[in-house]
Length: 378
Ligand SMILES: [Zn+2]
Image (cartoon, rainbow, N blue to C red; front, side, top):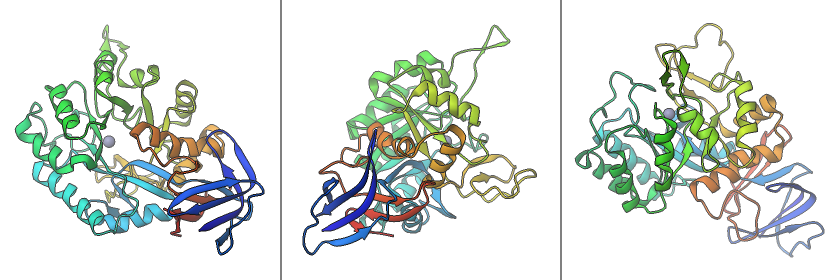
């Protein structure tokens, strides 16, 4: 039994100050004011700071200087120290079939060995994205129409671990690919990204389980309309449809998504449909002029932005600065909403019976303590 005392609990839509929270058997068993502390309980004093649900990063390739497919144990540990109690590591479309399968197996092996305790399943970013948008434009190995001979082995290797498949709706035979994914894991969720689909092409796939816009406003196309006007495209479909959650990469300079755009998306999508992701990568390109001192952006050797060096706690802090979001808001964006979008049923919220994944943080989301499945992990 673990008793967290003097907590300001961050609930989905309110706070409970001066609260106690009890964990036992890896679960949240009770919380509230004036709660009796059972004899023999281990006491953790939150000293009035915020206690919220553990953060959930559904889209990240790496943490620190470690790719998940190369060193999942270290990458997952870094995420955990930054309050991320559920991670969906990404396997990415720059890999060919053999490497895709190899990366998936390498991460599964670390999970099986018990060295990736915050694993929440895979976010498969590919293989069928639009080669025009994203890294490896020239060398993308997945230019041919979707073909079972190419994708079935990947789908079967990922199995039920694949929680999310990202795709470009305009790719040929994409429906067959989606049905094959669903056959392997009926609860799988699809996202639209690295795409120049029309809004209609996006909406047509929603009944099949398309629910998320991958790094919203990044790596999407703008179809020309009457030569000079911008036609509705992926971003508009994600903004327009309540049934679609929007991932946001929120860096300190507002480079991935301009602060004005962040505020716009926040107003359009509302509190329940925004998810913060880190999309962290380890491309080791030098920092271009004008970006000196920036610690949460990642560049490739062409000087292009290639993902971030974010951790999710920092993304929360950036979101508060850029948009005026509250602590409760950013916990919704970085825990409750991703759990809802991906269908993780017993995390993302302080609720009796939920897994006791918790963080203690100050008002700037500096992570002081991390509790994973009822155990103090940091
Ligand atoms: Zn991407």
